[in-house]
Image (cartoon, rainbow, N blue to C red; front, side, top):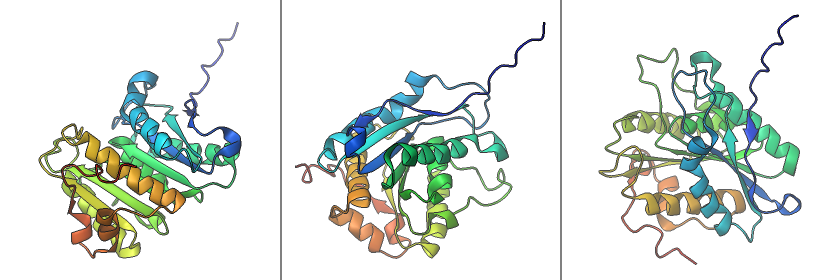
Amino acid sequence: MAQEATPAPRARLGRGLGAEPGSVSGVVLLLPAGEQVSSRRPAPLLAAASVRTLGRRLVRAGRDEGLAAHVVHYRYRGWNGSAAHLARDAAWAADEAVRRYGDVPVCLLGVDMGGRAALHAGGHQAVNSVVAVAPWLPEDDMAAAPEPVKQLCGRRVLIVHGTNDERSDPELSFRLAARAKKANRDVCRFEVHSDGHGLHHYRDEVAALTEDFVLGALFGRAFSRPVADALAAPPPLGLRMPLAAGFGRSLRR
């Protein structure tokens, strides 16, 4: 008797947070961290933990506009070189959001390796904005080619990075942002001074900054003064914008 082949893993969207399907007017796709190389399946609860809390905050803030959020569950834990599995899964998730909700704007929001996936998949036609928090990017001597940036034209892009990040070099995200800014003025980058990869010391400020940017990009809310200034400033000023302690306290409604 022939042995049946193991079905190939599939990406999927986690349970929707926020607006009900008939009232959705914007979607945030939450891309968790990953690994450089791994063919193992992610542990769903552990992988989603890093982004689900942020997703809940976003849908509370965007309730009146009809914001929905989904965690993207990858097929594999790893980026896996040229296969770029996490980026492919992010693009699939954008397709799935269109299938479920129709012609609504999509924001890709990723942390760590998920930040790299968000940047790579940002060229999807439904995506109007990208947020990369402490994105993992390859060192120049590890990459076969520079990280792409042309796909980000026409999108609003926010990168947030701790200056003491020992897992993903913040200088690499600055260099990527500088290249992206040459082709797309709607790119900004905030530095969280003296914070590490997890951005634990300024967690509230990072969440408030993300909320401000996402709701402005998806629904046309006015950006806070620091975000507006960062988007308007020429490099390097708008790409090394310090995230002030207490950011967001005066913005709470």
